Length: 173
Image (cartoon, rainbow, N blue to C red):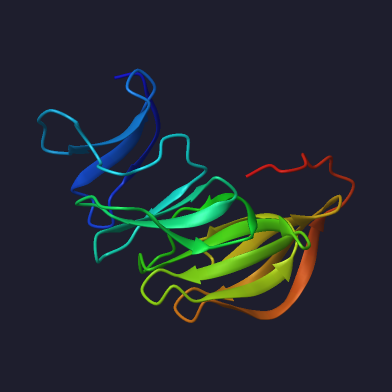
């Protein structure tokens, strides 16, 4: 299938991937079988979250989109935003995600996959949730970490600098 960017469903029973030969997002059961296209899904996304209510949320075309896994018309969640990409595909409870936005400023936001509400967490980019309960991210030429409550989708405490003097790619996601 020339698969790219595979990831598991929230329940671990399916895998979604981009088929380079088909230029589509495909779904296949972990137990086997033939891959099937996801109706209405965009190929060439920049990160995807599969929520427990069987909705895909993906970064595509400078925005965030919502699409039921069973298919249908994609719905733009963030309009007029420049979204670089989803950098933490899924938080521990499977309902939220963290993503980068470059306009109006380089910011890290959280999205509640159930309500569609977004909130600005930090100035920076390239955030990843780590099992210690922190977001690790870059700002300018520094790597930082901050406590993160994944259930409430908010930072806790102050950021600390881990490394300085890094070369950070613009628009990396």
